Image 1 (spheres, rainbow, N blue to C red):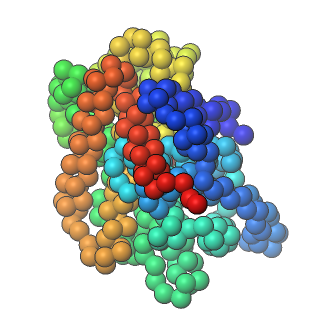
Image 2: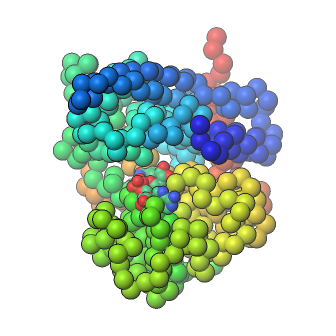
Image 3: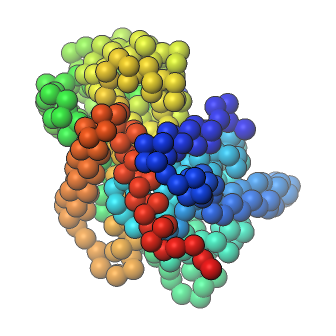
Length: 416
Ligand code: NAD
């Protein structure tokens, strides 16, 4: 069970939004509960010959606006509650950027660091076979998440294709390019974070090219976001990974850090022209823009008061707790919420799916350009609602998302 009750967090956010919308009680109840939860226990024969049993989940939260979409996570802390919360956030994320999906999430309770590549392949092929009764290119389309990657998606696509008897590229996104993956998918989330950061700077009276930026997490999302901030002329003064952070008020060479330090023994902390900081010190540094791009529940009631950034753009899922949100709002900080800021990944997954279904592929420029248009429009939709309701950006994003899902549910009607 996760230390923080993430499902409680997700339900609390929905309840706050329901009050703003004066949402019908029955509809609120429908949206609080996932449509389907599948729990599977399945065996894998390890390289040693030993048989081990794993528990996996696939949760589909809402199907009113289209098929469901969401990542598959391999992590020892994965559980049904966390998977359900993440599925619910995916529903809001797809609705806020207005792509025709509902939310889903899946995962297996496993420490993949203990498994060989062959064992991960066997675990993946068996897990997807166990949940193939609910996934499919027209029903529920998985994607990578923590602990999974393009190779895992390739095994999923291969397994489901073998079972169908023909190749099904659209059954999963985040695939390698040569199997129907999309150009620009790997960079999409980080790029989307920066597109929203640029717009948020504009509406907050800041100029991104003059801003000082702190990035927590230097993985896929954080490193691309940091690099794109640098391209916009911003000074990235601190970055971190799970082992801690580095800080230089004059700026860090992001591309060099990624090329020469990230992913090698000792990581970014081997870089010398900087001060070493802990992850909690990093969050409290003097800066204009803070991009939490690591894991959930990093900004809490214990450190929210000490955050100095004017603008916080959430690359990670759920990095700010409900209590911290309130403290930041009281201090006049602008938080661009995860469901908007990190939606670039799912938007580009949507592009990948569309390309796969049509067997017609786009250039990276086309992908990036279409992504930026969707992210900008979504940001300004949310900003307009925030201004109208005089609330924070998370509530505004939730108002738009819940309203769109509620409207679709009502229009479709309740069967029979
Ligand atoms: P990743 O595994 O590539 O990178 C995670 C980074 O965070 C790594 O640098 C890791 O060392 C660091 N980290 C882990 N624990 C930390 C801690 N306690 N303090 C500081 N740093 C820590 O993962 P990613 O794909 O970049 O995803 C990061 C976050 O963004 C996750 O919350 C994920 O759910 C979310 N997200 C990712 C995508 C995507 O397309 N990759 C899309 C939407 C949301």
